[in-house]
Structure formats: structure tokens, C-alpha cells
Length: 187
Image (cartoon, rainbow, N blue to C red; front, side, top):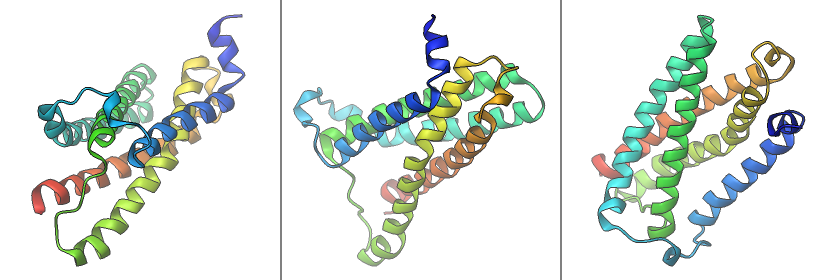
């Protein structure tokens, strides 16, 4: 039995496992449970990460929209390439985010307390919630596409999971750009 055949029958279980590991890493970093000393510290990279992640977010929005457009036009090959690129951008974003948060912790809001309380924190809470909810849908869509042929995908929940993942991804990346602007350009 090949790895692909083994994984094909375990997409839901693998989705749960990968989602749990990914979210454990994120929350472990944010809650400062990962020792900062385990990573090499580069001040230049730490300063650059928010700006790199903003650029990655813009690129990811583009690849997600392009992937959605491709599948609507019936271009499965282009859709696959765009969505794999989106996942690669997401992974790069996440690695950079985890690196920075592990070493520095979450960013403090530099603006007025009223803006922090009534705009920034609620906006951040929605952004984080959507990002967390998105993870299992992304993994399910990726795993089902990677373990099934195109002709087999209609027998899975790939389409439904993909629609949800793409929508949540787009909104979350877009909200992340607003948060970036508030943290690094507005205040």
C-alpha cells in the first residue's frame, strides 16, 4: 500500500492531526510556551517579518483569487498550482510569524487606548478566529486533493471544504493587512 493510498482513507484523521499540531505551535508561540532561546535571533529579520508577511498576504490573496477563478473556468491544473502556491505562501507566513512571536511575543498596539479597545482588539479577535477556523478546511482540501484523482474528488467534501477555506483565507489575509496597517503605518 502506497503512502497516498494509506492517506486517502484517513483524510479526516490527518486533517485533525495536522490542524492540532499547527494550532498548538501557533498558540504555544503566542502564549510564550516555546522558549525564545531555541531559535537564532536576527534583529534584521525580526524587523523585516511584519513587512514580509504583509507582502506574502497580498501575494496569497492574489493566488487564492486566481485559483478560484481557474476552477470556475474548469482549469483544474491551474487551480491546483495556484492553491498549492497559496498553501506555500501560508506556510511561509506562518513560519515567519512563529519565528517573530516566539522571540518577541505578540505585538503591542501602539495607538490610543480607545482605538485599541473598540477597534483593534475586536478586529484582531475576528481575524484570529477566522484564521483558526480556516486551518482544518485548508488541510482537508489539500489532503483530499493530494490523495484523490480529479475524477474521484466529487465523491469527497473537497469542493465544500475548498470554498470555505478560500473564503476564510481571503477574509483572514485581508484582515491581517488591516492589522498590519494599524500596527506599522497608522500608529
